[in-house]
Image 1 (cartoon, rainbow, N blue to C red):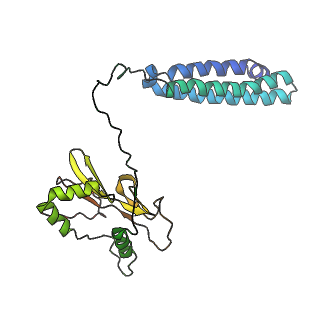
Image 2: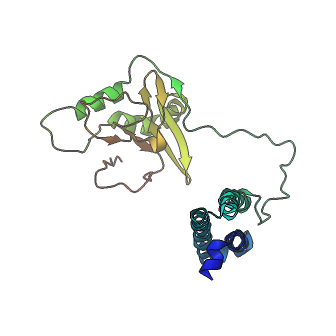
Image 3: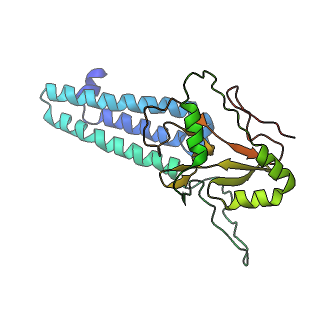
Length: 245
């Protein structure tokens, strides 16, 4: 049997083609719940391609030039066919028919969502950032926590809440947003000459917008104000949370 397999120009390719058909069938959206079978056929298809390669080397070694060349040509053909066939199931149209017939009613104003990475022209210096980095660079302090004094913000929130929120909503140095019904404001940093918002508002030494400064130790900072009495997320033991009543 092995002699017939390695000495043939069509048996290795036929076996690989049949395994590929089985792989495509088990990869269809209707059969994805039996993914273990699809994985098995994926392994078998890889082994069948390896078998074609071994058969072609054996053919060429035996100077069976015709069989060897055909087997070599079938390798890229089957590989490209498998990529094309699998891509139809992975990137093709959805089969659940969800929202296929949904249409937006007329006379409704539609606005494009804002990009959270939007940047604004800055000024000469970000004072908040400068003071924080100066504190990080202070020698002789082994306490990794940062204790902020936001008493003025608390007073402004208590006495002139609307003014504070309007300022945070219009200032390029703050991002005001709602999440799960709670209102938050996260401080942006000015990187270069632009106010930039990093992912979730976290800034660190290896931020892609930073010019690498070897004098800075590793750090991660995020300053968020919560106006609904709820924290933005569960803080770790390295986070500083201020309770102001």
